Amino acid sequence: MLNPRALFLPLIMLCSLIVMPATAQETELAGIWRGSFNINIGGDREFILTISESDGALSAVLDIPAQGMLNLTAESIQINGSNVRFLFPRIDGEYYGVIHSDRATDGQPVRMDGDWSQAGEYIPITLRRTLTD
Image 1 (tube, rainbow, N blue to C red):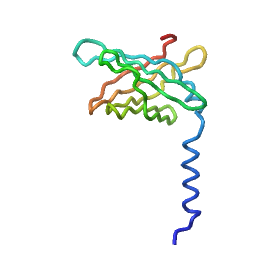
Image 2: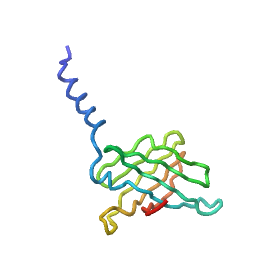
Image 3: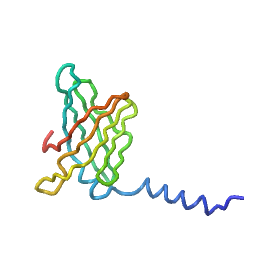
Image 4: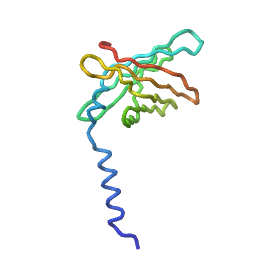
């Protein structure tokens, strides 16, 4: 017979992961991050990732205007140390990268180096935090 306590502890640990507030590093990511990529068809394409923090939770919205992708909400955001991953399963896409050690005068990160992956294609994109929309 299975011990009920053996099930209770993993359940508590799972719940704590779901409701954990954002860490200081995660809230530092809030802002507008811009980059561009070129797939040799029509020149550079702008890539805009807007990250918001509310009540300790992060959310992100992706815009790639040249492809008609606007206000696409990330369904999952994963941060592990300086590694980040934003998942967009509705379009089979993800941005994953590393928060670079470069900092602005206020101490906030200003650069992420990573890759945009969609439908099996990988495109390197460096994102830089911008001050305004």
